[in-house]
Length: 177
Image (cartoon, rainbow, N blue to C red; front, top):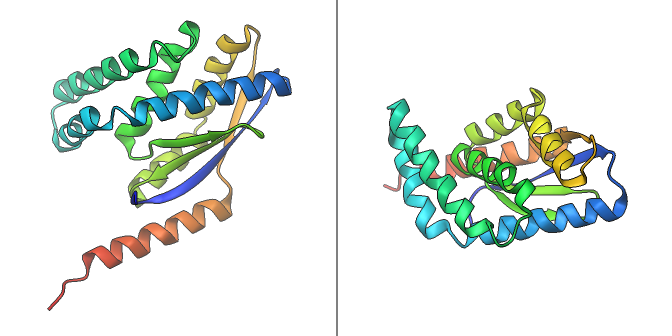
């Protein structure tokens, strides 16, 4: 069973009708599932990235991961969205909150947050609007019209994930005597 806390991030967007939202969610869900299959090749690189303190080395590792994602997503993602999806999935993987699935009802992204630091990073990326800008750009390319996406993480969802991660961290730090 995967470790971490499962967190749902909601995406509200104007400019997309229900059919387009469903199609977009389906495209993202397929991308997330395809990328999961590349974990055996990607996880060692993620560990290298986390252990490195050299900026150029981190950049090189990030580029290697993007190449892996690009090659596995080429057949499953519309060409005009490919770069955005690769960027999104690479960032989330390296920051410790890889996307787990996408639900089409109102476009809900589920990610497995692996640490308190990753949860704080996800929240900061949402609060700063960086993820909203990335999704707005991706949705605009997909819909071929201007789309504004706003991502949100409910306070309740955040508090539950935080409690789960704190509990897991405490449980793992107990020394058996």
